Length: 374
Image 1 (tube, rainbow, N blue to C red):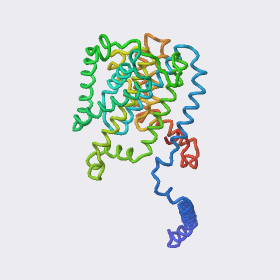
Image 2 (image 1 turned 120 degrees about the vertical axis):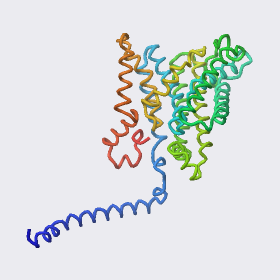
Image 3 (image 1 turned 60 degrees about the vertical axis):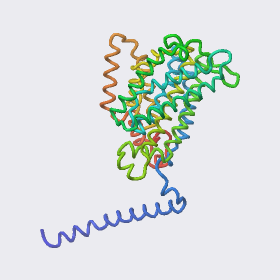
Image 4 (image 1 turned 60 degrees about the horizontal axis):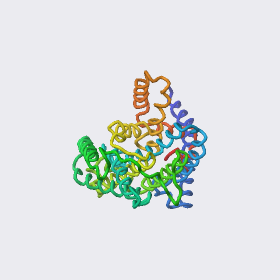
């Protein structure tokens, strides 16, 4: 190689470098113009740029339009309502485990406690209205969660799960023996159907609208938490509690508040189930359901507020799909769950988000297309 060849090569690459410099300069100017137009956008957290409320509105409208057309039989209506109420319970578990990182194995206990509380308060002719029973169920379960969380606040990870599982086991035994509060052998029967503003929700088609509206309100609450500093503090405490504490984050307070909120949603779900079915018992909230709620969050996605809804749909709908092969349904169900866990470790919601990120233009993604980044 002659001495002139490197110089020629450098001269040939100068236009490319100049083009790259010009593009970088143009991008910088564009960013500066955007900052000048909206100074707060430069410091606004990413969660504030996501259209959570628009996504919730779209979701509620789509379910309201599609579900009545699909659920034409009593069995399908029952499954849709079950999906909605399980989504509420799983959404509460998302706050406890997904955000706070506390593996609380007592969500079914909170559901049962909420159901029994609402049934007891609305019992008899002198009982309180339906909405008072539901509000009392949420308040009582939140207070119980606060007491349990304060007592075992030093327990971490596996030990916290064992402690809350023990609370569940003891609580179920107490429910079976507290006949004055629950009923004979833990069976509360004759629970009044939901009634709001003089309208009684008796049929599954009527209950659907009540459950959908309640789930929409729960999603709004979760969206407010997602857009608040509490979410960032909870994630910091979940990922590294010591560093978060040294940074000034009240780790125990944040985790306790989310535990109480998630348990209150569990109590709400249990109360709705009791008034919907008219009967409630400890066998309705057994260990299989506790594992199922964990699977809902795992399948749907632990890092998204939409994960519990997707996971609940899979948990409720998949056994119905496999009903035609009843002999092998358990094997197929287990294999499908294993495949989802192995192939989609971050859940179905994360897979959908990544797919949307490839299909939807970057310009729209930055603006926060519903469901794309929620």
